Length: 115
Image (cartoon, rainbow, N blue to C red; front, side, top):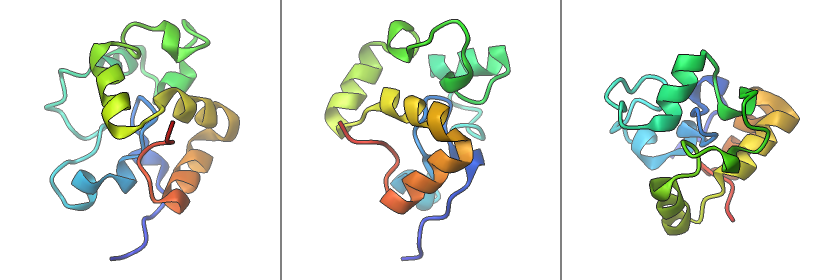
């Protein structure tokens, strides 16, 4: 298996890193930004409407957990099942930027920061 590459374009709107996702690596998913079928994702729709790359750029909520689009039942279920902390991903993006986040996640070999 080849090493996971860092690519800021593969950071999902919610902060997950598609570049380390098994579905993306296996060719089963195009990633958040390229997946036009992901109309069900409220975070993707919100970021697209606001013309921002991730929730880290949102000026409406300083903490993404306060946003009902980011912090909904499905995201809580996903977070529990996959031990995922998307809010930590957003915090990391705010701290080190998209490139830094992509690099950190590629080095971890993970699509998310674990809880």
